[in-house]
Each structure stands twice: as C-alpha cells, then as structure tokens.
Length: 393
Image 1: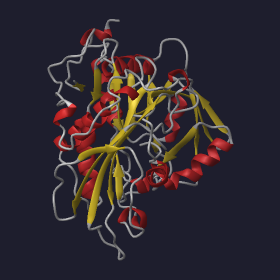
Image 2 (image 1 turned 180 degrees about the vertical axis):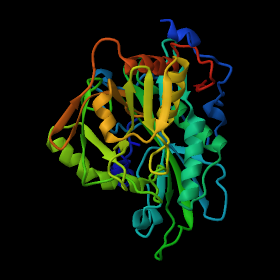
Image 3 (image 1 turned 45 degrees about the horizontal axis):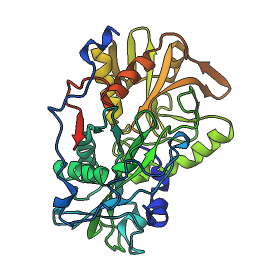
C-alpha cells in the first residue's frame, strides 16, 4: 500500500536504464526449507538472459544510507496478454523505460493495481520471500474488481522469484534493509471510450529499501483529518488499485506541513470509526486485547496485518477485528501500524482537532514483541513452522 499515487510517474519517467523468550516457543532458530520453492538456474530462463554481474556479491550501494526510495536495479519482468486471453510466458529484460500509448487504459481511466512484497537475505546467505502467494491471491481479487485478467498464483510467484534472483546483488546485507518488490498489473492497451483496455501488462521491478518513514523505528505522530476520507462503501478501497492513492496526497501533505508523520482516516459514513493510515493498517492495544478495524470493503486486506493477527494469537493475545470508534483511542495502551513497507511501526500520538492522545512507547511493548517475531520469520532467525517463507536457490 505504498507510494501508489506516484507510481505511474515512476513507471513512465523513472524506469530508466541502470548500470547495473517463552512466547517464542512456537518459533526458534532457523527457517524451514520444507515449504520453500526452488527457482531454476538463470541459464534455463526462456529468454536466456546473460547475468554478467552475477559474480558480484553486492551492488555498489551505501547500505547505511539506504531509505525508502527508488534505486534502479538490473532487471525487470514483463508479461502481456489481451483482455480475452490468459497470461502466458513472460520474460526478464533490462530495467528500462517502457513505451505506452497516450490512450492506454491505465493513463486515462486508472485501470491498474499493484502489490508490494520483500526479499530478505539471511545471516547464512539464503534469500527468503515472505508469503508471496498471498500477494498473488490479492492481485487476482483486485483484478476481478477492476475488470482485468490476472496472472495465476504460480505465474505471479515465479515472476517475483525470477526478478529477485536476477537482482540478488541488490538485496541488502542482513540487518541493512530488504529488496522491495513491486508487481504491477496495468491496462496498457489503447481505449477511448470508458471500457476495459484491450491489452494488459504485468510488470515486476525491485528496489533496495530500508525504513519507510523518516522517523525510522521512532514512534509516529498521526493526524486524524476529518475533511478527507480514504474510501467509501461500494468503492474499491478494499483492493490495491492505483486509484486509491493519489486522492490521499493532499491530506498527507497537509499533515506533514503540520509536523505529523501521516494521516489516520475515519469511515466515510459516520466519520467516527477508525479505518486505516494512508499506507498501512492500524492496531490498538488495551491490556491483553489487540484490536484492528474489520475488513468491510473499505480497508485493504494487508498481508502483514493478516500475519500479525496470527502471530498475536500464537503469543496468547485476545485478537479482535471490529468497528473501532475513535473514542477508543483514549483508553488504548499502545497503537501501532502494519504494512509491507512499514513492517510494524509504533504510534506515539494521534491528534484530532486540538486533542492529542499519547500512547506508551517505552518499557515492555506489545508491538515490539510482535515485530521481533515477524522479522525473525522473514529473515530466517526464527523457524518457520507455518510455511510462510519461500527460499530462492
């Protein structure tokens, strides 16, 4: 759910050529290889691309200065099909600009969706993906809503694997960040009248990243904007369409001008229930109870959200998915956000009008416990008994 609002500009203008302790009993130690899928050697790729930089262990990047921005890597993956056909074989190509018709469906009518996932390097040198099948399933759901054909789950996962393997020298060292992977599904065929595009392109590119928010792991300060809403019932807020993101830019800019990290949106009907932040889901903690807004068609079904809910249950917390009145913030001990880009981010305060509510950010923290387990699974430090990680060989 990140940077969707500016991705078309990045796609058309920026895709340039590059030089190319007890509660943890359920988890411990290493990542299971039983659930891992193998990636065939590059020499067997259909397009026989030459990986001339494959001998370099790492790209020439100052990993200590890495933020969340576009760093062009070596390769991207491309696959196309018509609206009445199925996606077939795609291919890797050099990361470069793409050519697109001025009348493309994505440019004129916003017919596009995207996903975000990450690849991490483990301490023993393995490369792990985290639940890419869930991203594939979400893309299929979004494509159906936006009247687009979509890759199969296997095609999606294979494309992500090939892209990560081809760009493996751009995966940061352990503890220095991740390789953020951005799959896109866009209507590239020309269309003048309001209708589905005649042709579609599935792209996957990647960029090394670290912290999404400039605060790093410091607590966020959120602002409730009562003028703008993110999504309405009956709309497309529950799918990862590109059209959900540009409309929040004004609210974000206004909040940041006032010194806040991001915006927390309320529901469009009653304007009193929490929905989500611009780029992530929201959770509140009271004692042993962890609550998050229920999925109701206006809230994105985050992969990290889903994972944190299951991890929290494993750790013995009472988990609720419910409508959360904004007034419940006054009784909360902790608040945190989750998302692929943000991971698990603590919230230090939320401001509504002239009222500022502060939350616990020190001592024993629930968000940190859940974050430690999540990152442990993603980076291979904790055994994956759930089959969530996929190893790329």
